Image 1 (cartoon, rainbow, N blue to C red):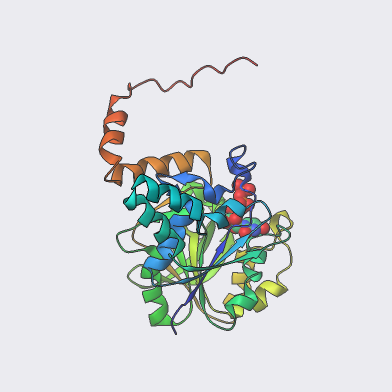
Image 2 (image 1 turned 90 degrees about the vertical axis):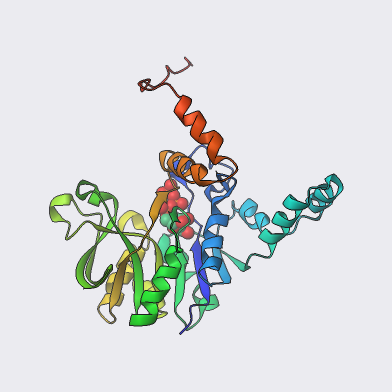
Length: 298
Ligand code: UTP
């Protein structure tokens, strides 16, 4: 069965990026030359998924506006004769068929996905967490779709992390099945390194069967009073197999200041327009000045 729909949960408050995200959605922050949300929608489209359901909240209007037409801007660009940017602005508008659903209370990632239940309907679907930007020769979701086609079960993206860092991730207990493919035996949320069943961490790309909705509806609030996707997946696992796929590519965490800076530098260096100058700039930085600058006294 073809995966036609993507759900992009963007209903969280982005507190790790405060104060930048006080009045601006974190998905609207720029990563190189476009907002984070555009990178994710482009990955969906490059993977052949053209229907995108974005879960939003009351402060996320700028994210929606980004994919809308702006006739005034088009007029200004046309008058300036900037046809290249005019085409780019129109391309963004036509990128995908996007629906927005408001999550009225921030009750967690599992709850955000549940908001999309009626729009998704009774078919498997993809989930993209915009915090995770994956730089890959073949889009990470496209790689996962091949695994889904073979096993016809839910697939979650995994990556190897430093064994000391397991307490920051959902970790799977893996049974190797094929090259880069593991059958998930269990999922453990943020285990201490001593208790982690592996160092294979869940990252923000999933293909889920529609049965997940039933289980999310039954999932009681867990850590932080939120409905956790991991808890719903654990219930699903009792009925259906779930596979973990170790994608080829590099994941950047765009949900923290340092992660966003690293992502900007890594992807910026690859950008044909700004890459050469950025490389020169990085080379020109004095080495060994690792001390943070003294804070301005209040
Ligand atoms: P996070 O907890 O990592 O993101 O949720 P957050 O809440 O936006 O950010 P911090 O932790 O306060 O900095 C993972 C994903 O789930 C979405 C977020 O938008 C993010 O994409 N999410 C989280 C929701 O859509 N709704 C929620 O209630 C919680």
